Image 1 (cartoon, rainbow, N blue to C red):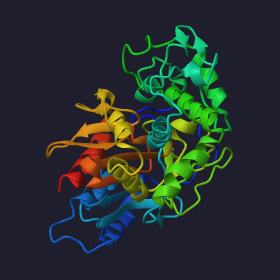
Image 2 (image 1 turned 90 degrees about the horizontal axis):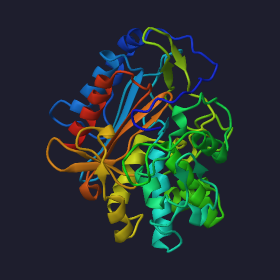
Image 3 (image 1 turned 180 degrees about the vertical axis):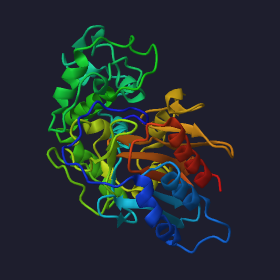
Image 4 (image 1 turned 90 degrees about the vertical axis):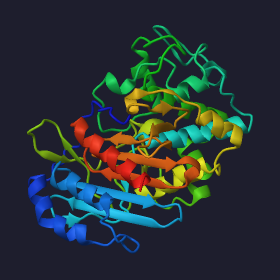
Length: 384
């Protein structure tokens, strides 16, 4: 569920009888590009729309969606491409997508709220809350801190790298068991390496401390509080996406057919990547987080204290479930990003939540150059 992580996941069996992406896009692109943004268009050409059109036309992505929120609060909503390649259905404006590792930021916020309430300490050992659970070759929960989980400095192996995960229900302990069959990557605190296992443990700590399911805590503490009407944590065995959404696709080889992978049980990603949302709701979430609406100042400062994480691009830093990336116009923006079979999301908000942009595409591009163009579109939206 990391930005560039590709899970070993066998897709859902249903395969859409799809035409080639470029051919379908060519039939619909002119119509979709002509749709006006949600507010009056600017006098100059809208570069975000142009960029999304190019991602569909030139890079062969089935669909792209975006929301850009300006300093004034004015919002532009964009779509390009086709929502369902089998039927040619348009991309729904504000459609829901699987947001992958953006879920980590939601999980981290709940942990940090509990830190602010004095119920968890960032320097607590994992064993303080989950005694005797985390043991393996070079792995000892008595030595790993909560902070190291949230910042990916624990050394825990990443369970998604080691097993062909099936699209079936998983319990969090199942995911942890996969990880603990493998040796530690390094001693706690000695290095940085992205691992979804860290956030499975963070979610288990939330459940142990609160006595309630993680999904319930995220809903109560974040979703309801901010009024994120299109965001939710799907239950195990819920393979659907509730509201209008573009279909997500998987290409298993460079010249292979596109498979419709929209419906699947997402519990294999749990606290690390299970949630569903929209680009608009993600804008609101990250903006309100950076404005201090979800965390006390002390915990937000901890969240924004980063270590180098070039995994997310040159100059990137990883805080506690929050990524900073440099902007071409100066300064940085804050967000996370998410990768889930069928969907990629990128974006974030500028300092203090003044401007926000998120983009979603409906395939995990294997070509790094394509993802670089998606990232460049985010930068362009945040540096008008």
